[in-house]
Image 1 (tube, rainbow over the protein chains, first blue to last red):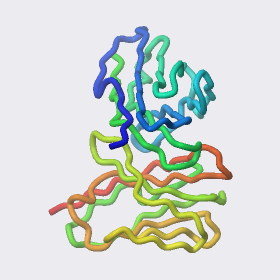
Image 2 (image 1 turned 120 degrees about the horizontal axis):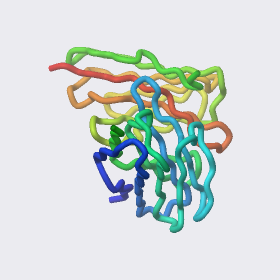
Image 3 (image 1 turned 90 degrees about the vertical axis):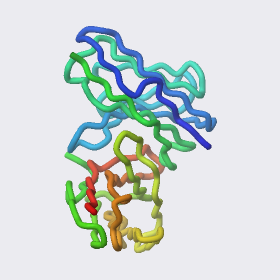
Amino acid sequence: DVKVTQSSRYLVKRTGEKVFLECVQDMDHENMFWYRQDPGLGLRLIYFSYDVKMKEKGDIPEGYSVSREKKERFSLILESASTNQTSMYLCASSRTLSSEAFFGQGTRLTVV
Amino acid sequence: TQLLEQSPQFLSIQEGENLTVYCNSSSVFSSLQWYRQEPGEGPVLLVTVVTGGEVKKLKRLTFQFGDARKDSSLHITAAQTGDTGLYLCAGEVNGNKLVFGAGTILRVKS
């Protein structure tokens, strides 16, 4: 069974903390994505990566960075968490940029 | 402004009723995908439509891609409580990354 696994289902962090969200896929996909999901706004793309060590900004990259040191792993970093980054974070991978996206179960992050 | 507009935003119906949700855009898409997301889970692909005017059926779900490839609809016949979830459409423009709509929240009551 193909899988995208996110390291945490729920996280509570304090304002100003550095936060790491980890994502691993076992499908040998070139492309990986980080989205945030907020009510009424749908999925908004934060960053994506089309190859190891390659990254591209999505629609809302401010306040975030990413790391892709290995093909199967894509990390999202919040350098200094703020309350407006409280959200559901979804990781996805796909064979091509626009083919079927396989999603992880999501990480619900609360910044207090 | 959403590139893909989904309507309605929220739909609450009784089991056994029929429903249609819509995904509209002013842009032309190479293909369009529909996903369902259940509470506490990530979205899962239901179908991809590629050809203008295409109709695809998945049991009680019927997906249609508009002739001009700017819009799509999802019709559910005799809804069941298991159909409850968030329905998302996502469009592809010339091999670029997907663009997602905001989704339609469907609640089917028993």
